[in-house]
Length: 240
Image 1 (tube, rainbow, N blue to C red):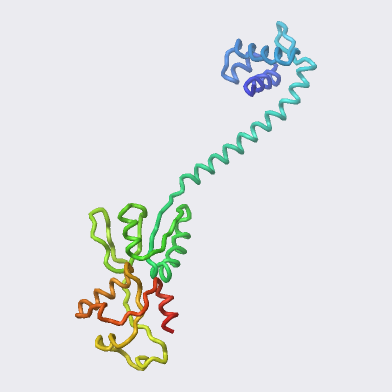
Image 2 (tube, rainbow, N blue to C red):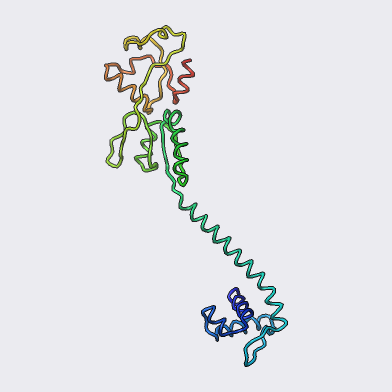
């Protein structure tokens, strides 16, 4: 129907079927057939045909006045829908990155990293999972994540690329009233005499601690671990 209306509008404005056919890249017979189809549909003549050409009838003038606004609305609607489709394609083309981080990194380091990435890569969406090292490394190995930030020793796997991005240290945290508070350092021999709070099994922080103790001949099982928590912040609150 829209094509028929466009043909009618062109003929009504040019009052010349030959010129209309040229403008619309159609044959004159096709133009005539579409005009005739419209006239049959509405039961009136829109054009008077003479040897000199065509002229609008009274009904044709009324019809022309109506379809101009209809076609303007259709053009506007097409432009709006085209713009919306373009925006939708742009949204569909946004990249999505699944990023994982261990609890400690997720709490202390990742927020600043994410703030930076959101400014420098506005066309990228991130889905972030915070968990312990064991869970995060398993997700990367199973290709559920694109990249992960962990502490401790990364698993050796032919499909994984590992890069060091941060150096940190582990320290003993005590309340201000503890006898050790006045000391600059303690010896490993003093640790078994104290009740300790550590990270849970599967934590990269705990793994680093276990390896450091083992290198110095101390087994974690020899220490008096009375509590295991899944957050450094929680440990600090308990100790304080």
